[in-house]
Image (tube, rainbow, N blue to C red):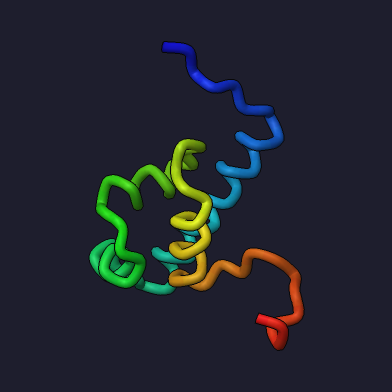
Length: 80
């Protein structure tokens, strides 16, 4: 089975986002159990997200980021 190639930019972006997610979760004292319950993910998926696995669903990445307070875009929050 061939692995799908990911660009260096994609890999770097995933590592950055996953690091922000993990750091925010720890700094804010949000437990793994709470993230799992609120996001509807499994422990293994959360671990993969926090490691920057490119095979994770982007929606799961975004939901976990939102739960731990990582701002994803510099958008005006009034439009959300």
